[in-house]
Image (cartoon, rainbow, N blue to C red; front, side):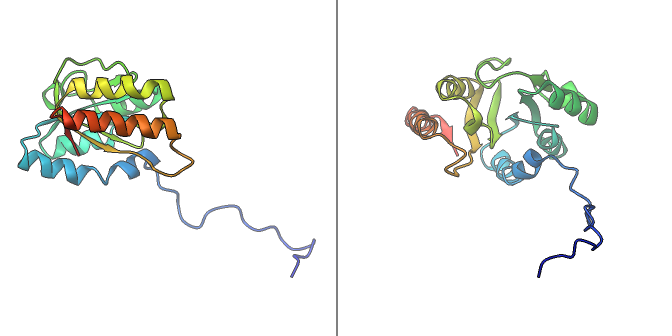
Length: 178
């Protein structure tokens, strides 16, 4: 039945509070147990989180004895990560948090045992996919642990095919891809 024009308006306030954790942090939690298991099984001792947002995963890795650093394209996210997590050089491969692009990482060859990235690579422009994956494999000493959204609306077909081709080539060349 139609609502009466004289009825009190519905409340627009939520009965339960919204989560204060950034969406990217909630999505990234699925990778963290994988990284922890790899640290024991394959000796992963350092991890770069590409697309780190506010640094939740980096601090989680710190709490589990793994050196970790984070990179995000957003300077605001990096400022929040630094404010919330601090920067302790003994817990990271300095800098602990850096603003930048996945196509140009400010760390040396093989600086990390592993690179993790959650729901980031599908947001790259098609012409950035190959340079970004080459850069990730340059900085990763052992492996990449990637979570890539696969919804049809999230990944352009050219991006998906370039991602798949580069990951297959990296795996064939002996690069660890999980």
